[in-house]
Length: 119
Image 1 (cartoon, rainbow, N blue to C red):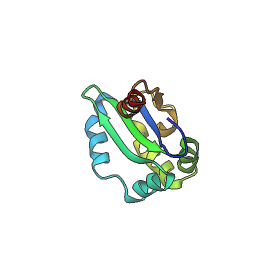
Image 2 (cartoon, rainbow, N blue to C red; image 1 turned 90 degrees about the vertical axis):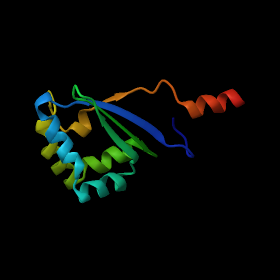
Image 3 (cartoon, rainbow, N blue to C red; image 1 turned 30 degrees about the vertical axis):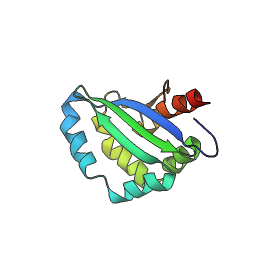
């Protein structure tokens, strides 16, 4: 979804290594305040992470510009440090997780379909 009055919804997936599940949860129980501020300053809102028992990590956020948010975080020293701090927790990590996550295509949105049905 794009447009001047609507945010883009982004969903992504990563795989946390089974042996690092507890460490992943611990680190996300107290994310660095500077990292929290960087995410917000990048323009990401309504950001959530979901972790399944098999290590499947699903992330979701909304932003007005994916490109601008990505560029902001790519240039952020604190984001680089956070990603390095997290790097060892992912299966097959070949770079910064925030730059290598697989983005999932959206196939359904309740509000959009309700609006279309009401037209």
